[in-house]
Image (cartoon, rainbow, N blue to C red):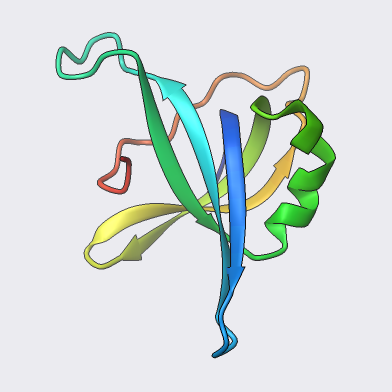
Length: 107
């Protein structure tokens, strides 16, 4: 299932291994849930992404950290749900603030 979220992207990196495995990671920061007494400040999440996502993000690099609209897919990995970024773009003027469901991959 693909969802679109508004996220404050603080960075991204990509990797390419000798065995042909390629990928990327996108790091976002979101305010803690105000109704959760076990969290304060901001929470940082890292999401997997395809290697090519960095090409999309280069256009925004001079302005990072910045708000972006991300298409994400929830995936099962090692018995827990993870988020995988499929695309990134400037937020649409009509886009509402959508937050993904909490998952065990957030750090």
